[in-house]
Image (cartoon, rainbow, N blue to C red):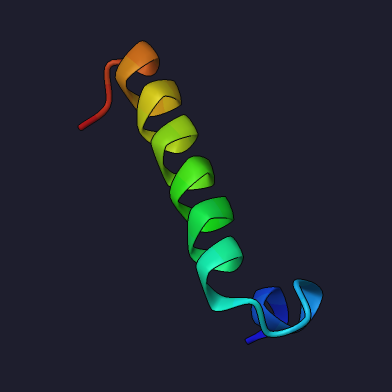
Length: 35
């Protein structure tokens, strides 16, 4: 909810931002040999 407020309720931009964060997280985990 906090992230949605951060983007003024722009759901698509929020989803895009969260998606980018998630892919970056997956790359980091893969680099660490986790998951």
